[in-house]
Length: 140
Ligand code: AMP
Ligand code: ZN
Image (cartoon, rainbow, N blue to C red; front, side):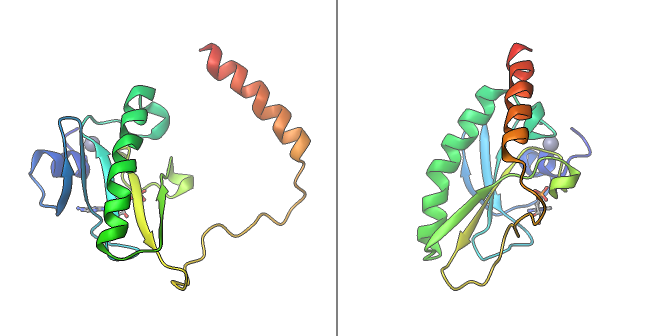
């Protein structure tokens, strides 16, 4: 996609610090890291969002994450990492080319993700709706 910043990184039109590359995927350092070592793993083919991305690509993408994430953690002496993906504007996605963030973590890094929902949980009702929706999604 001509106006996609990650496609430009993949083609070499925009510079990046690459840490991994194979025929279908690449990984490079985030230009605005949450922590040093913050890495993005990206399929070379352009898919805007996780939910547009074929499941075979997602499976391989996470195989690459499984390889790269421990190396990132080792390189920066991290005690853990988050491997996370933002799908859609509401979820904080800024670059519409599917990617997984690998964010090194430390016990005392002070980062606080995911404040908890304070409303009524309605676990049974929500669970029932998700099971119904899943039947429709799987039937597609
Ligand atoms: P997201 O919000 O999940 O779409 O994440 C997009 C990420 O891409 C952000 O963390 C940005 O800092 C990062 N980013 C944007 N432009 C570049 C770039 N040219 N090189 C490396 N990372 C970038
Ligand atoms: Zn792209």
